[in-house]
Image (cartoon, rainbow, N blue to C red):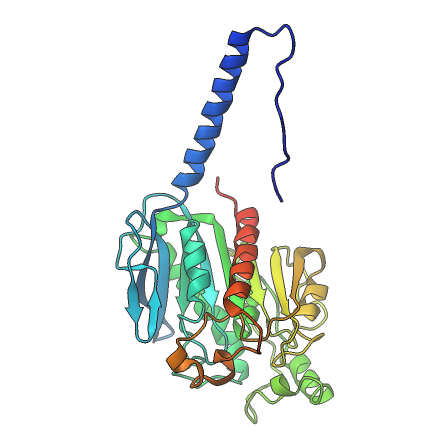
Length: 348
């Protein structure tokens, strides 16, 4: 999208003073638009961790948000971010984006994406999913994990909307979510996508060789065929799913779902092989989904690069194929995500 080029030429016979007045009016309107757009943003990005209690467990949750002060530098363990720890939330009304990491990940996995959204006027909340994170994998690979993850995101939303500082700054019609891998499934469940463990079991049996890495994920007895509950949260108005788990959605899984979704297919993904995941979800959602493809991106490309000292320790998530520029990819996809939310969650 872009603005069309335009030129203005005075019409013969129009008084010069009228022309000047018109130009002044246009300039005033243009200035007002600039000021309005600028007021939706803040000078810098704040950061803090909060604890959110869900079913008796505490989820450590990272928050990035607009702040009126200049950016500082925050260090959390081995990670350094361009954000000011503990800065006050800026004055204004903001959209809110929930950010869900993949299995074995953490709340800082997508910090670059979070900072880009916060720079543009969004509050971003990224929980470390209890039971399915780098430090706690009790439920990874089980049917219970597919239930718990979206439920945790809804609890995050309850906590933030009820917060004395943040709640009054969040536009109730401007709530979205981004998820990667298992997080992609999680945000799709939030808008009404219904997982089916029988569909998942069938996929594991039928496509064990073609979708080998995903089909090997799980525990003996970790899946069951009991119906999944409705995990939809009607407050969420738009979602982005990057390399989402899709093989547990069957025909009719998105029946009645009208929330817009941007689905990203990473073409060299060997963890979730197509056409059973991103492509499958987009087909099920029909006109409500936009499928975006990235020809050279691999499954872990959406994760912010790890510091050099950690890259080898974290395995595949820290490595890129020769010639692939992860930072350039993140710059591209972050802008696509931002444009999507700006269109789907417009400021009043």
